[in-house]
Image (cartoon, rainbow, N blue to C red; front, top):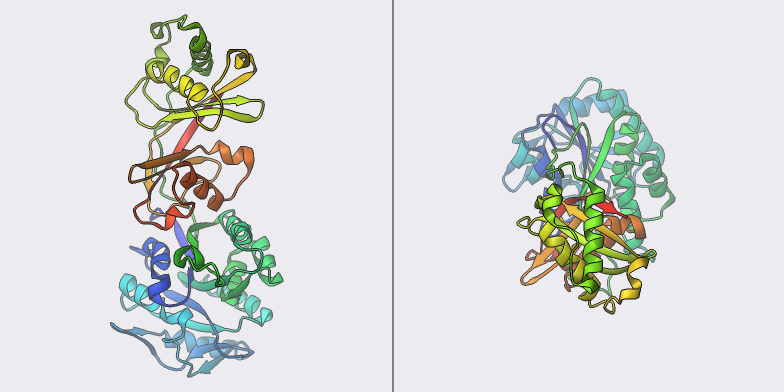
Length: 424
C-alpha cells in the first residue's frame, strides 16, 4: 500500500510460525514505516467463556524479549465494560492465535503497546459489542486491529472458499459477515473477523485487499486430509501503490484490425495488398496476442511477449500462427475466412508479482515461466467464461504445460499485465 493509505486492520492465519509465517508476512510487510497508538490482537479463546479474556500480566513473552501490554487500556476496558471483559491467566503468548503474531509485531514496531484479547467464537453478541467499543475508541486512538483466523474446508472444497475470497476482495462486508455467521465455512477466529468488519462497515471508502491465500493440501499434497485455508489480507482506506503498465499510445483500432484481416486473407492469396508505410501507427512496437474466433468459440491463438518488433512486422506472423499452428485446432481452410472474427490484444509491460494471486481479475492477464516452459492467459478469457482467481492462475499454469498448482513452486515466476483489446 502507499504510505498515504490508512491501514486499519490485517487478517492473517493462526498456527505455527513454521507453517503460516510466510503467509502472515505478506500482510505485515505493509506495516513498515507506520505508527499506531494501540495494536489490538483479536485472538480466539481456547476455553469456553461468556466474556472476552484480557491478560493478567503486563507483558507478553517472545523468544527475543517481552512486548508490553497496555495495562491502562486493559484497566479501562475492565472498568467501563465489566460484562464484556474479564481477566484471565490463560497463556496468551502460547495461544496460536496470539503467539504467532508477536515476533512480527516486535520486529516491525519494537516495544509497541499491544492489547491482546481472547474472544469466544460462539457468542455473537460479544462480537458486535466489541465492534461498537472499537468504533468508539477509534475516535481517540490511532489503532491497528489484527485478526488471526483459520478456515477449514467442508465438502464443497476450494471452490466455495474462492467465493469467500472474492467477497473479501470486493469488500462486501455484509455478505462476508452473513456467510461467516451462517456457518458455510468451518473456521476458528470468526469472533475477531466479525468484530473487525462490523467495526469498519460504516466507514466510507474502506477497502480490502487479499494478498495471499492457499489450501494446505496444495502445499502438503496430502489429498486424504482435511485442508485448512490460510489467508492474509489488509483492510485500509486510500490508494494502493500503482505499478502502471505503460499505456498504449492513441492508435487507430480500425487500422490494426484491417491490417490483421489482410494478413489473414494473405495466408491463401500469398500477398499483402498494403504496405506498413501507409499505416504509421503500425510501426509502433508492442507485445501482441492474436485470437481468432468462430462465433463465440476460439479457433486459434498466438502471442509474442517481447516488445522489440513493430505491429507491422509481428501481426502477420501471429495471424498465420493462430490460423495454422495452434495444435488445439485443425489448420484453417479458406472457406472459413469470412466466418472468423479477429481480436488483437496489445499487452502492457509485464510486472513481476511475488504472489501469483496479486492481480486484478478480469482486468489484468498473467504470464508464467518456469524453466523452459511458459504460458500466458489474457484477462478477457475470464470475463468471457467466468472464473475465480484460483481458476485463472491454474489455467495459466496449464497453458504453460505445468502442474495446475505450479504456483506453490518458488521456481515458477509470475507476471501480470494490462491489455488494450481491439476487436472486430
